[in-house]
Image 1 (tube, rainbow, N blue to C red):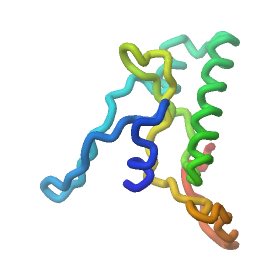
Image 2: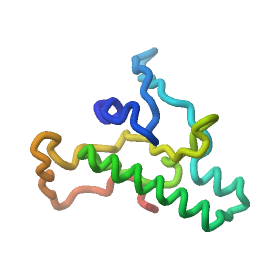
Image 3: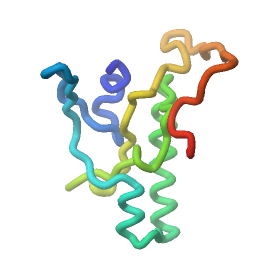
Image 4: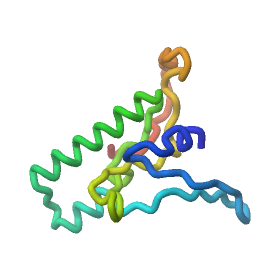
Length: 127
């Protein structure tokens, strides 16, 4: 939740509206987004033009650079977590799903957390 609040209002990240427990579940309200990159790729007959690839890549790299500038690592990068905006934001690529994200540097000192051996894989193995 801390990471979602940190990114709130930033370009290319869903806006956070609220969070509450309900009937034993936790609910989160954020920006309604369009198709993810897998869905978009399928709707384009599994072909993107070079221009589309370059425009997507530029925004995806920008999202990751911004996230890293906030001392956060996503840990679950995959096409399903990049979504296209709706309406006036239909040309904006959003990065979503911060459930596995964590701070990789101390936010105050910016010192990298120590590397630890023997840790299990985090995220989606195919990516």
